[in-house]
Amino acid sequence: MNFTSPEFRVKVGLAEMLKGGVIMDVTDASQARIAEDAGAVAVMALERVPADIRAEGGVARMASIEKIEEIMQAVSIPVMAKCRIGHAAEARILEALQVDFIDESEVLTPADEENHIWKHDFRVPFVCGCRNLGEALRRIAEGAAMIRTKGEAGSGNIVEAVRHLRAVQREIRRLTTLTPEELVAASKELQAPLELVQWVAQNGKLPVPNFAAGGVATPADAALCMMLGAESVFVGSGIFKSEDPARRAAAIVKAVAQWQDPQALLEASRHLGMGMRGLDVSRLTPEEMLSRRGW
Ligand SMILES: O=C(CO)[C@H](O)[C@H](O)COP(=O)(O)O
Image (cartoon, rainbow, N blue to C red):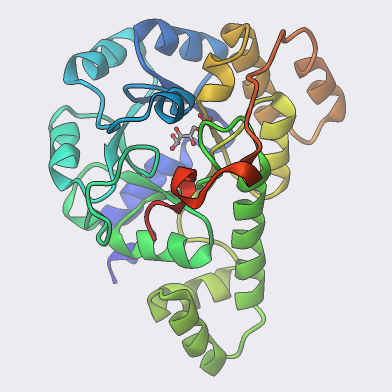
């Protein structure tokens, strides 16, 4: 199967190099420099941070080529960029631009409500979001070399990220207890290929790195994601919708690197100024939940 091929393992190796770090959403060169100076391991180029996409509405597309180039020229760390779910043409353009990773993201307006991109056909690695193990395995089957739990992007509320991280870990643990014939039924329930289900059952983890995203607003939120099994954290609105983005960005990097050290977390949490206001996710309608996009 494709997920064990040498080409795929090279893409996964690139994802592995980002473990233990923070990937920050940025919309221009000045935000990208703030991210790099704060110690981000990569930046994610997009036209608006998720909180603005949510507030302003309209169709959210791949960022403009000029903005992505501006960001690529501004920093020396890897640059990722988002394309719409199912938008293989945006992805081909980003690949031609030589971004380091493509995020087929629910944060942008989906281009295809049934099909995600067949990512094995690309040389560039992809990251995709998930809410549970079945969604993660379907994306890996299509060729995603990195998974991130979706959380609720732009909400400033960590509750959905926690829900999704716990769901993935709980479902992985369950698979490790099943017999071979029960794994066949699990594959049907998860709507995921049996070979991938068997691999997860044998290894007790995903075959690609599992990062967290969506709603991280404080160093403590980022540390909580790591405690729940994330191997790295994506942050956007929580930094750039706060009073002091540079300070908060550095504090979140520190919290992810030292998430097991309460004293370090205490220091990272001091003197940050106002955080983003945040939303009560339980009041959002299903249509307003970005995490429900994709399947
Ligand atoms: O899809 C993403 C990963 O790059 C989002 O940009 C990420 O979820 C950011 O969300 P938030 O603005 O809540 O931090």
